Image (cartoon, rainbow, N blue to C red; front, side, top):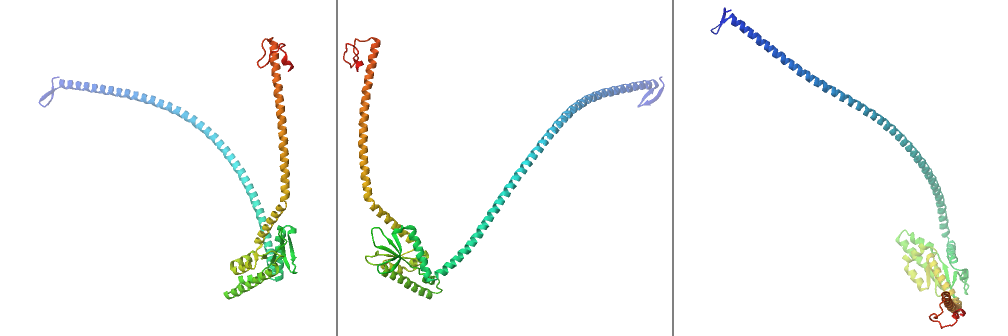
Length: 391
């Protein structure tokens, strides 16, 4: 055992040392193996514990996941049911809206159809009125042309003026206050005579229509032609004024003024606008030019004068009626006074009767209470105590 095997760093290694060293080395290896196995066992235990924990955690997670899945499935089912319900409600609402829209659209289309039909009917009526107006316009144009042709004739113009004069006078005045074609003592005839109340002298009116001269004045193509037409118009109207002043202003038989009736407002306006000299000449000659509107105003003045005259005529009768009315009022006053006196007497009698009734009531009370010692205040002493009964 002490056999030398080798020398290491000056140390001789024997067999026994070598065996002891191998044994120690083996022991150390065994210890290391055991330590490693223990460590592996602990690691496996820890790993097993960790795996168990992981398994438990995984199981818990799986359970939670299953619970969540079941809850999600329930929610999905309820959501599906809710969506189905909402979808059915939406479908019903859409159907109702569509029905209502269809109904309103149908009504709107019906109303629009009726309105269109009415508008077409109105349009047809208006077109018919337009046709009538066009026909009437054609007739009016024909009448205007006929009137123009008629007024081109001097006699026809005179008849037109007299017709307008007669229409204005006869529509406004009573029949007894005017006369057409009135004949004067000289044998001359005026177109119209208006009789004023309380005056036997008539107001004479003569119709004149200087259409040719005024038309020539209006349609003058040049200044020279216009001056000639103006001269002609002055001469024609001046001649009419002179004729009226000479024929229809008779002292003591007619009024101090006469009227020259111009049956056209435009002609009258033209005369007043451009021929003031002619108007002034007419005023000086006591001839008043009047248009249809001014003649109507003059007629209204005559109506007012006639009413005033009638009122003056009835003034005496009104005065008599007022006197009779005053007498009736006086009689009424006397009768009311008599009635008031009767009422006063009746009230006095009623007051006396009430006084007697009060006395009787008081005396009856005393009799009922057997009180006869003292008479009531205001009454004389009565031994019998029954004097008030006689009253």
